[in-house]
Amino acid sequence: MQDEPEVAVLRYGHRPGRDDRMTTHVGLTARALGADRVILPDNAGHSMDTVEDITGRFGGPFSVELTAGLNGVIRNWEGAVVHLTMYGERVQDVQADIREAHTEAPLLVVVGGEKVPFEVYDEADWNVGVTNQPHSEVAGLAVFLDRLFDGRELDREWEDAENRVVPMATGKKVVPADEE
Image (cartoon, rainbow, N blue to C red):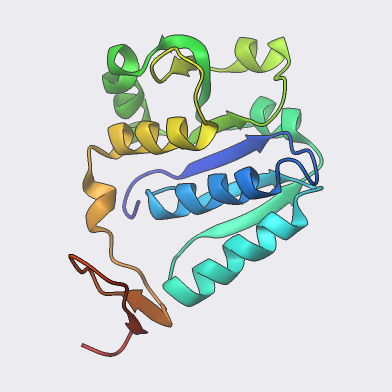
């Protein structure tokens, strides 16, 4: 979020055809819930295109990039690394420490897509579990970002949006962003 060190989300792994929707949803969730960018595996170009399209239509800032060097992103990250895994420490037990570390340095949030190698667990500053039960990585990312930003991400202002959603009790309404 603005005026804070960067939060980037790294999608670790992508199986084309099988993970397309999930990888796209990792990117959309990262954007909607306060991250500054998402880093996707280089074989996830379709997901990148979708997230960039949504950012163009509904605002940013938010960036998407592809990389072949997932391990290098983690190893060379200048800041703290959080790996979301159901095997990690309970989010409620470590969220204050992570939030404090993020006030000083950028944060990389690693979200697995297939079997994550042990070196990711070893290189992370925190391995964090949301419920320590099997669940969607998108759900884990959403809960984690909400805990990190303490709900402030829900009031974010979007820049350069073409469209905006009008909140309604029933129905759906999308209007041009410049329309009041």
